[in-house]
Image (cartoon, rainbow, N blue to C red; front, side):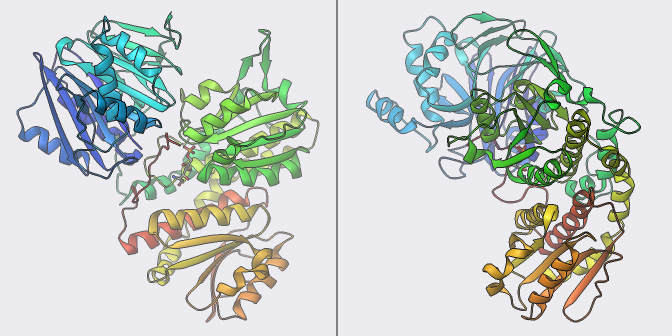
Length: 615
Ligand code: AGP
């Protein structure tokens, strides 16, 4: 989704801005732009398509500057055109970039047009820069104009603005879209994600909701939503930006699929004892009465878990429901964040709220967390891959997955490490309730090796993928905790190969989807050897009897055999507890190889963004 980079320095900042945008490319975007100021001269360069197009246009121009702002745009209001790309200017005086959506843009545009402002784009963003320009006419400073303007904006924004008349300062404002200030020596930076600035600094201030800040080369002044000057903590980042690129891999996604055994090993490291879970993996927090609370204070009393997430993270939550209810003796609801946030939900007694997110910045999940915090949960906890992200900062407890930076838009290693975090949560709650959980811990410990073994299936799956290249639809089936894995498999195939795919709990087939079965509809089945295997086999026979072709990923001892209507891929036997994690691997590989055969943009599939920071 959109990305922001800004800098105020003594040296030219062109390269810093372009490098920062490149580091945000993986988030998904469709155009890019930069505004630079040099000796009071304001210039802007924009390009549709990749950042490299912008870089080329910038290099071909003589535009340079010591103050600048840059942006990658993921279109929401207005098509993908240079005119709609950010930065937007007002009266060739102010330049502004924006992440988020201004919902009352129509009303503001009408007022601004009546006041004589000319609009050059179809975006909601352009109203911001003209509004600030209008208010600047009667304000003492750009800071004051921005503080007044944000009161008029409805919606979400992370915005950065400067005035060519005072190029030594940049004003930033955050509400609903993250912004971070990077601290340098005699120069300072702004970005929507610290990853953009890792080449220039490791010291970051994360702005909080409602903050407006004035950033100069030497100073950072921050004001909260009430206009009161505030100090925000400086964080030293130890994130390692993966600069090794794709290595020998053709795509980031393939590299990330292969990184899963290591990602899981890193996520487990130091967090398991011989037979249990080390509870400090979940952190601690101070409650309203300044009492320090640890995870065990919550886990021993919890009776219900409410999970909220989106997309792939939602699927990991769906798996966790099976685990928590079966092994930890607590009830569990799982809900899509965009639904949860707009309905009145019932809060069960002694409920723990759990959000799951790779990025920690997903707008719907964050909004759902903020809503739920008003509703009387015992505590909130997030399972997240990005330290310092909004969800981590705003949740009471946090379990950090150690997947490392995930660049491919389609989530792979973030998903399997989320599952590990959720399995550890299950074991930890069971442990604090005095339930038997050592079998879970022992199964978790086998995971890295089992994932390695599953990756050994790549070659046979690559061969299978050929049969999908001309297909337009696919159906994924699973039962029990493999049903959400089937959902995740269908999502992966949709995202990167653009083949329409749906997932069903196999027992639902005869209630409707059986009507779809014919030789053109591949059916992908995940079939570990568990107590549901015989039921699943009956479902498979129902499909075969109707001419469907089955692709089954099955336990090596479950006796599925390849023939005219079935392609069976044997997966080494694994403990049923960890089977959802292991069976994810062949489905990821299948989607990947189908997408490669179809020639799609695997790492940045069309229309999608890595971090969905707008509603
Ligand atoms: C997964 O492949 C997708 N890119 C998407 O569904 C993603 O999981 C979803 O947008 C949630 O993101 P989050 O984990 O960063 O909150």
